[in-house]
Amino acid sequence: MLTGYWYRALPSNHVSRGELQKAMLLEIPLVIGRDQTGKAFALRDACPHRGMPLSCGRFDGEQVECSYHGWRFEAQSGQCQLIPSLTADQNLKVDRIYAGNYACEERDDFVWVFIPDPGPASGGFSRREEPAAEAKFDVAPPHPHCRRAWRRRGPHRRLRPRRMRDQAAVTARRRTQIF
Ligand code: FES
View 1 (cartoon, rainbow, N blue to C red):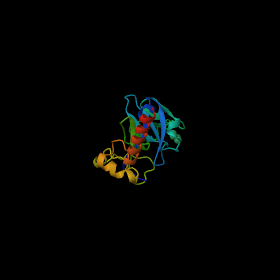
View 2: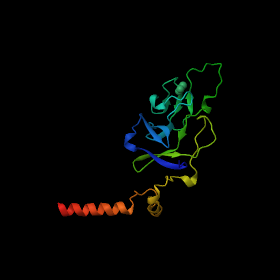
View 3: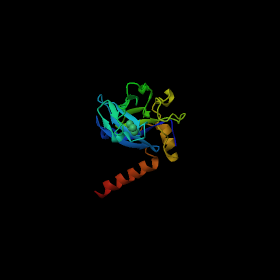
View 4: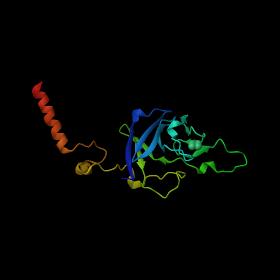
């Protein structure tokens, strides 16, 4: 698996404000949403408490609430905001708990998510790792036969290997001859 790269998660128009969508990247289940300011976010689709999918919970535009025991997480950072079952004499530091969360950006009408290299095991409770400056919007390289074109034209251009381009030109020519 190629970690340390940005991956396309969902088309932008599939992610509406106040709704939660599921996605899967490198076998990581994600819940993707858009907060009330319109900014997209990506969290691991597993509550750090007992692993319930957060996509089954509620989202008010700011916080995602787990449907099982009601823990609430700030959507952009994944930081825990509330554990409803805590009593006054329990002094657990709620803000030290994080839902797994990923850097997320929108470009070219897609929501992109940065999948970092695996770090030390933290049980899904730690703050997310930000992409390094040199990985700023570095997308995973394509299949080997496309790599030369990818290097020449850069990762953001649409990839179309020469053979496909030639085939498309032949098809277009045939169409104009027939009709
Ligand atoms: S499993 Fe999410 S709050 Fe318990």
